[in-house]
Image 1 (cartoon, helix red, strand yellow):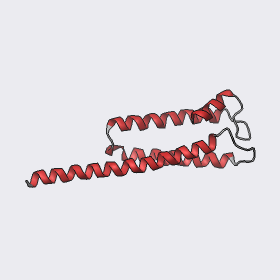
Image 2 (cartoon, one colour):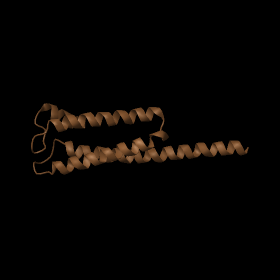
Image 3 (spheres, rainbow, N blue to C red):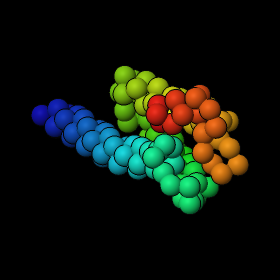
Image 4 (cartoon, one colour):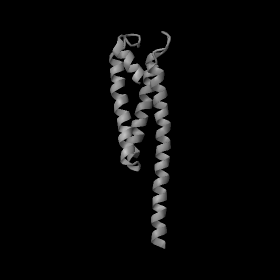
Length: 119
């Protein structure tokens, strides 16, 4: 009985830790999304601090990446694949967006506008 109880306790702790990691990742995903939407929104006035928005989105993105890489061991492989896909998509789309910004930080062509919508 002792061995079974000990094993059950170990699995309960593992699932509890996984739940904590997923909860924190959900929070960080939301913050990243909010930062990206704020930065890449095509419906902004000309006087918005675009560089500040970019920095905030960048910080939120890397906070998510660092936390995820530090805690991926607690997640199942399919969840890791999904998060890896989101990170890769955001990374490549953000670069596409940045490459098409004019000097005031607004998309200068259709590719930049399309990237802002994808973000």
